[in-house]
Amino acid sequence: MERFEKNHDHINGSDWELIYAQTERWKDESSFFEEEFQFLHNLIGGYLVWLSHEDNLNQAKGLVERLNSLSGQNRALGRRITGQLIALEELQNGSFTGDEPKVKNDATAIQAILEDFVKEFRDLKKEIHHLTKIVSKTEKFNSLIKK
Image 1: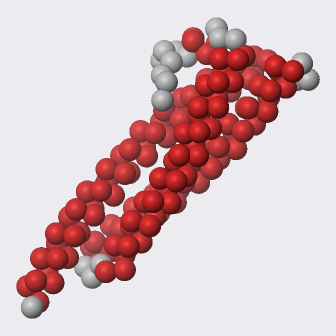
Image 2: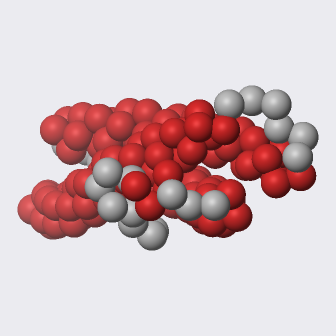
């Protein structure tokens, strides 16, 4: 993901084509995250089937709840990005009747939201990976003890 300066001056000084191109990349990223959510849901779902320890099951359920919440945030962000793309298309073809500074401010806000979202997603993905490692070791170990 391309990063702008923390104060997002780069967006405010950009022309509409640059903002449009960046917004298209954000839309692509949002679509990518939808695929990632599907993969992570399938991964956790596969582990839920064979979990026997209550602690592991509770931890997995908590991660699923966070995953669902973050997935919902991504869908909302995708809708906001789509709205931004429509406004930018209208600006480029001369049919926009709204507030141009608001469009630039929205681009700045979307950038900030996406940066926070990516951080949250990465943290959650690390926790899911950590859980799968621990659970597979613990669950396998306990099944060996029972034999």
